Image (cartoon, helix red, strand yellow):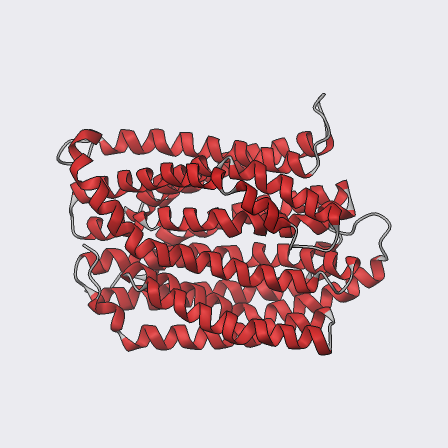
Length: 448
């Protein structure tokens, strides 16, 4: 086989890409609301979400890897394997929910390292605590979403994602500003709205998944899968833990970077945080393309068709790079009206726009390389090559990028100079990931 044509790939990927954009819009809206709540809330918004992500993304990524097993079993036409992979993901999700709550004290202690401003630390700590209690819903929703994605049914995942994020957007102003008789909760309100959205998404997807499982061959009752769950969960952990570690270390390196940018000054830090929220909005579709590449490669490898895996990954990459180039150009053109949404009260707007434009240009410069890296890394993960993806990121981020950031912070601590180090980092990590894919070593890995 030569793989799926571009149209078939788009049918799989567009709901994933739009779903990621939907998530980014939710965070974007959070940032806009928090910017108008106070400067401290805008400053705390990025560190708060990163602190939560630093811990929760590990569990989320490990559970999400159950979808790779679903995809490979789906490609191999093994209905019982598909069903057991989903339920093994739920088992891991239940354990993750308990562990996340136990880690709350450590997370609150880590919050003190995120900023020198005690108000920012306090807000980030509250946000992290509340969101941690939603980990079970987050991971349960991820297991169900990964089941449908692994089977190639991404539109349902998208519409449930829209439903959950709509709940978040509606609750945000009510809880942040204290509307409709609710108390003014600020950052805590944003966290409560996020957790509510998690539970809505999990409930909807879990109901759809259980209905769907009853239609698979071999019966759909959980008791029939019980003997396979623990061994299969162990296998998911074997490959999923490096994937989760990759996510954690990636966010950790970025957290360190954000901490150093916070030392430049309050206004510059607020501009940087606003620009990173826009950056995520632009880059979010690429995460959808990465999941699409991972799913397509996993399905092809499940069939034993590495040629199709190569073709699907190449076509997904081409589509993703075309989209991110167009979005980056539009962002630079419309930089000022976008940034106007984030200007806090009492801030010099001219200085805010001037620095924001420079950061937008730097952001556009790294987007193509960053997109190529994340999509090809997704393809490698779909084949099971998660250990390489993790270790290469460690070398590039902690061996090259962060030492470079530290040197720039010591000798020329300006926001444009610090952001410039990101270009060096993404070019290097992208080149290494592409070389690994071209080597073909991933073809020898067999998950199922």
